[in-house]
Amino acid sequence: DHFYVCPGHLKDRGFCTPVVDEAEAAAKKRKEELDREIELIKKEYEEKLKKRKKSKDSKKADKKSEKSDSSEKNGEDDDNDAEKEKDEKVEPMLKQC
Image (cartoon, rainbow, N blue to C red):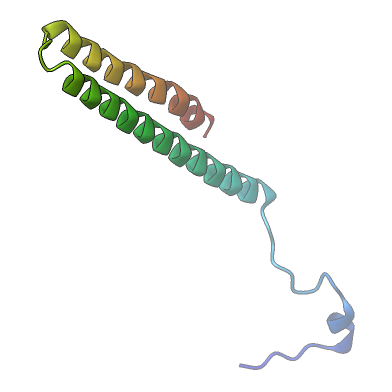
């Protein structure tokens, strides 16, 4: 496929340039930034859970003789607190979209 273009158009810098919707480009960039931020928050949350699980496992190993229902309830509360913390960080970002 061949296009004939006159010399005047070849010198014109504005000739045959793509039409860019600035609002759309800004929205796309913002969405990508939010997606990256959400991924970072998810990774931080998973790391916290791993650390808590390791510390919880080490505490259980140290206190094999002291098994009680109260310690298990505290562990569940920690997990719930971590889940709430993650939700608090992610929700405002999703609302901004």
